[in-house]
Length: 179
Image (cartoon, rainbow, N blue to C red; front, side, top):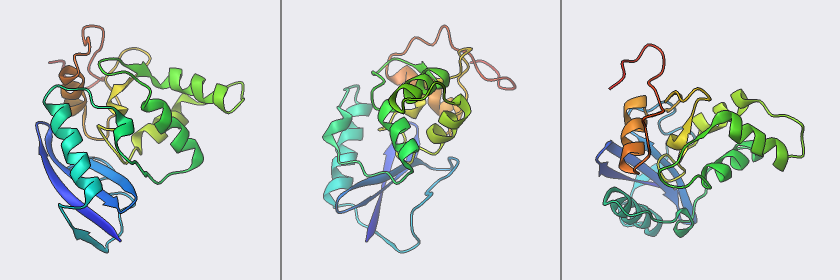
């Protein structure tokens, strides 16, 4: 059985989803792929231990703490390739950013390949079902563009600011006004 709960965050309402064995999703309301992979048959249950733990983790995060990702039992569904990319995302320190190309290089090394497509990595990052906790917001374009966040570039910027990232070398994607 799948269970959901709502969380009201400084970046807007979030939907959390889990099973007894782990957290399977955390989506910003209105984001691309919202609720992807979540079956229709589910039950709202605010007291499920994993959902309660995720809310406590988020409370600490939004209070300015830096809780460890390993504190939560995460169970995102995805191919082995996506799982590998998501593991790399979990290694990006708070307040830091990396690029799709850098992750592609790491994935190539881990898969014992000469090269890896940054676009393939971008697809895996974009389909991350556990936003914020698996920090896909810490990935930027090679040119420093704040591009590619399913929850929206404005929320990506806010999360990076929240973590104390230096945004001075980063820019809005083409077509979006810098703030």
